[in-house]
Image 1 (cartoon, rainbow, N blue to C red):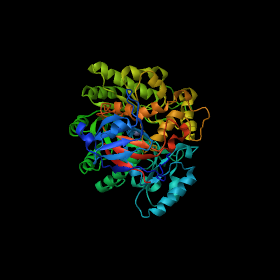
Image 2: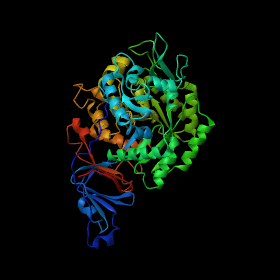
Image 3: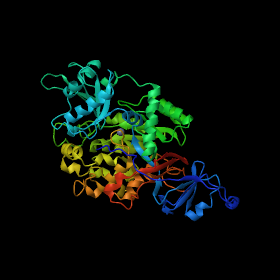
Image 4: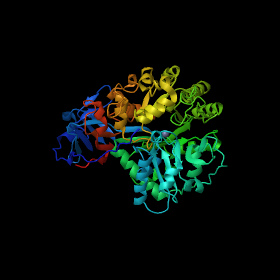
Length: 569
Ligand SMILES: [Zn+2]
């Protein structure tokens, strides 16, 4: 699961000019504020799938059609965007993102694509040299395949940072790696008990912590890291929003970590600096739903209701991940039959929490990766619907990495949205060696089965899980379409029966995503009345070798009728 960044070095000209024009057209129709001409516009509106041009007034699209039709809406004050025959799509939504973590990750040490422990040490030395001092070394992106025989050990970090605390998140956010100094500051010793939902990995001989901390055990160290100031958070968010716009995102569904930061988003909105739409979920910790959770969720839902910033979703996490054997499986792990993962929630408490929130018409997200976790979430949603006599709630399951065959049709039947992250299936060593080995070939043959879920009537919504992988949606589209690495491996594709068409993959980031957030009436396609959120791309995804999709650059991003990103010529 590689992070590949978007390089801004390419050249394009995009003209935004005001044209003087005779006043004749104005008498017939009110002129547009902005028109986009000469585009190859893929609208996702089945009544008019392709168009050349569109017109925007205020924040909304007012007309879609031919250049000849749309040019009639031009006045002397109309801004004209010449798309120069480039592909124009609705703005992309990322349905699963950890936005504040991602924003901070932009300024921290990045270990993605490291080869091994020595390579990691080299990167850390470089980063430490550029950031001298004694404060914490924070970063992320190592993966399990970089440590072929075991989990990472504190000794590698101690060699680089003997006196400076270092704390590094694994690429999936489920295992952390601390050095001796960080463990000491967190008072983790031989005698520290495990967290109920986490493991302090210990040396089998000495009982000493090795530095690897699984799942919630990381909170012991996280608690002693100095908290960023409000100013630092705002600066990070501004960087994150810019990065998202540059990659073609116009909306995100935040899946945890920033409900507490609503106020910061609101401040950006009040200053006119919010150029990305946010749907922010409340993270519901186990072991149970408490009255204070309900009031926090209800207060936010009342307060944030607009197109830019809204609440009303609650995120649960029912299990962990397959790589570290924390995803809950119906049968034991193949590489270690003593393990089958476990649910983070008592199933009855989860069920009753889901039913209570469903009754209140809140949208539910459940992180579920293993087949047992997924089944538990489906059962919880089915139970809530039956108990409350509700329908059309669009509850969601996030990730769905290995699902039992029997549960595939339940997504369509129950109206449960499959919120998946195509780049997580990127078939590199971490996926093929670690992920697939852990669950064995039979269960690995049901890896990320978006095609099967959709065939049985389930709705797909795509995202990244940034900072777990890059938020660049073109990497995701390419992986969903090819089920191969950029180098075309494996040759026949990783579970190739699950390949999507380019149109289906785009839909997951646009109309499917809008549906997954109850926004399909105002977002997700380019048609009159909808918000003017659109992107202009460097290449036509429908006409190129699918292995080149990740080379796509965004030339311009328009949100609410405003150009918020434009590539440099
Ligand atoms: Zn996530």
